[in-house]
Amino acid sequence: MINKIHVPFFGIDKMYRNHKKEILDTINTVFSHGKVLMGPEIKEFEKRIATYCKREYAVAVGSCTDALYFSLKSCGINHGDEVLVTSFSFIASATPILRIGATPVFVDIEPDYYMMNLVDLENKITKRTKAIIAVQLFGQTLPINKVEEIAMKNDLILIEDAAQSLGATYKDRSAGSMGLASCFSFDPTKIIGAFGNGGVILTDDEILCERAKKLNYHGKNLKSGEFESLGFNSRLATSQAALLNLQFEWLGEWIRRRNEIAALYKQELRRISEIELPNIREGCNHIFHKFVIRTKERDKLKKFLSEKGINTKIHYNKAIYEYEVFKNQKCISNNLHIVNQIKQKVLSLPIYPEITNNEIIFICSKIKDFF
Image (cartoon, one colour):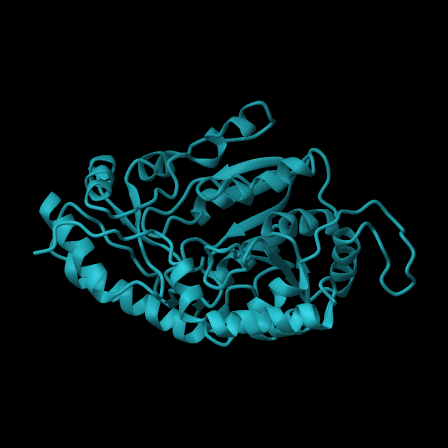
């Protein structure tokens, strides 16, 4: 039996080797026409993702972090407003709230799906609450219609952070279709990713779309050419849009393969009582951006797997409000019991279309050896 092989956590290099010709041909097309900023591939990408998520408008930007900030600013969130956000995600789900001068109010999470607990969400709404950033995590979604009902009932702006869930659905709704604006990330670790950074804002609101476009390029009105307000420089490069368009062709197959890998993990690990495997919300189509297991022996298992050549990650070992950047800011972080338990137990195993079944079986065999 093989005792040690190297299994990386990411498969970006393998993806490149598998699709080298298509990738280089795509880049060559962009470099040959010379429109490396604001080229035709940008509009093609915006149209493609808006159609995919059943939205009217899309604005390509430099990152999902900027997408969230531009969305908050475009819908009028101001200094001192309270914005509800999950306590368990990458910090970029909450840092745009600080950037705009608003107050993050952190919401506890569900133990089964790791996303915000909707009972706690409603309990933390006050007269100062103006918006919700609803984060879809690890490849599935919140109950979309229920979140929208809460926002509507309380007259709150709803912004969706769907960075990790492109392609996921809940009943008849897709990630990217919820609320006033939805934001996606296309960093290289995502289901489809730029070879660098990238993001997009989706909305059905024409005014928000136009405001976001101005913010995206130095406050410029693209119709008049006039710089009308203070903005930023957050344009997505044409080459990156072209690469995202290319990967859209493979998205369905990649999601199918991720589900196949997840099923193999579950089959191999189902009898280990010390591990809790990912749960899928009823009505959800999971895309398995991450395959997250839970165990009290998390740190010891991670070290053991590393010694066997298996690279794992912890998403996330801190609640968002515990990071240094939040400690000297005005934040509200009360009654967060579940997140403080979960963060000590979660471990992400490698999952990407290029990983082989033999590698998955090897990983599982080592996990079985540990327990």
